[in-house]
Every structure is written in C-alpha cells, then in structure tokens.
Amino acid sequence: MNVKRIWRKEARKRRANDFRKDRMIRNWPIHAQRAVEVFRAFALEAEKDGVHLIVREPEWSPHPDSLGEFIIGATSVHIRFASELTGEGLLTRTTDGETTRLDRERGAELIIHHSPADGSIQVFFEYPVSNLEEEKRKEPLLYTFTYNTDLLTYDWLTSLLPRFLAFNRVESRLEHPSYLDTWRMRWWRFTDVRNRRGYLDTFQHLLTPWEVLLLGAFVALPGLAFIQWLWSKL
Image (tube, rainbow, N blue to C red; front, side, top):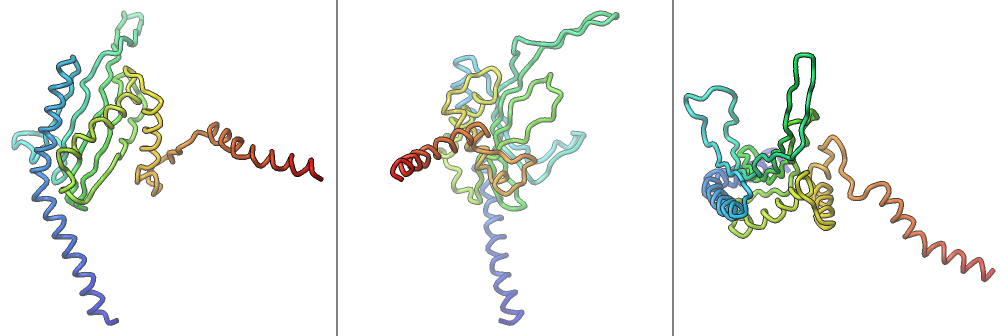
C-alpha cells in the first residue's frame, strides 16, 4: 500500500466525519428547541403540585453589552430544581454580635450539551449543592451520549425525566430514595464512560467492600459444602 492510498482512505473518513458534524450543527437548534418545549411542559406539571423547576434555553451568542467570560460554540439546554430552604442553617456569635446563614439547597440539574468540536450530544446530571458547603463540587454524572441528533426524539427526551427524578431523589437531602433508586444510581456511576476509561479522579465501584466480602462468602459456601462432603467420604 503506497502513501497516496493511505491518505485517500484517511481523507474519506475525515470528510464523512466533517459531514456528520456539520449536519449535527445544523440540526441541533431544532432538537434543542424540542428539548426546551418538553422541559417546559414538565415544569408546568410540577408547578401544579408546588414544585418549581427552572428551564434554561441555549445561549447562542452573548449579548453585545454583556461583560465577563462566555463559552462560545458549545451550547446546552438545562432543567433544574429551584433552590429550597432545608430548615437548617448556621448561627455565628462573636463579640460584635451574631449572624445567621440559612441552608438552601440548589436542586439537581439535567443538562443536554452539544459540542461542535466532536459532534456529540452529552446528557449530564448535576448534583444538588448547598450554599453552606465549603467542599469542592462533585463532577456531574455523564448519563449518556450520542453522535446522532436524530435520536433526540420526543420519546427519548421524555425518557430522561424519570431518570433525572430518580437521581434527585438519591442525591437531594430533601428527598428519600427507594432501594431501586439507589442501585440505579450505582449502576449509572459505574457505567459512566469516563469511569470505564479511568478519566475520573476516583474509580466508581458497583459494590462496596462489605458487599464484595458478603458476595465472596456466599459464592464460597457451595465449595465449602462440597469439601465437607468429600472429606466425609474419605
């Protein structure tokens, strides 16, 4: 195989990938608007029961008069639970008097993010955070991703909402998860593609060390029983 044939093969792959990314960039605004409509409809239903959800549209370009740093190119659609008082707080007394800081939890957030660089759509679950927390914010959970905007159908978008609600039940201090919710959360963390490829600071295990020990003991029981039976026959 000569060098010309090697490059022609590579060039075909590059053209195909560029075509795919260009198509995603053209189609993303349509699918982003569909996501906004689905999220707003869901927020209206939640509002009927007094639960406030905030929907944020993509910022296609910063306002000409706005100051600060702005991400350009990449855009995203957001829905998150509004901040809510937890009923707890921090009272500080000094010789100068006392101050009170009330604990307020900013709820979980679902983010559908489009990156034109690699032509991908990523779905993130952002963890709830308290205004009194001093620790570093957790890395969002990458729930799923795709390289094809055609998958962003109405049914696909609505299917994200129950997962988002389960995520919030597990992570929010104001909610109470079921046993199934907890296990689903473990599975999502374990199957996060960044976890599988070792990109995260800490590897997310499916089982705790205690559960691994119990599972090992359970698996070993038949072997021990066989050894005892064999010993009795000798």
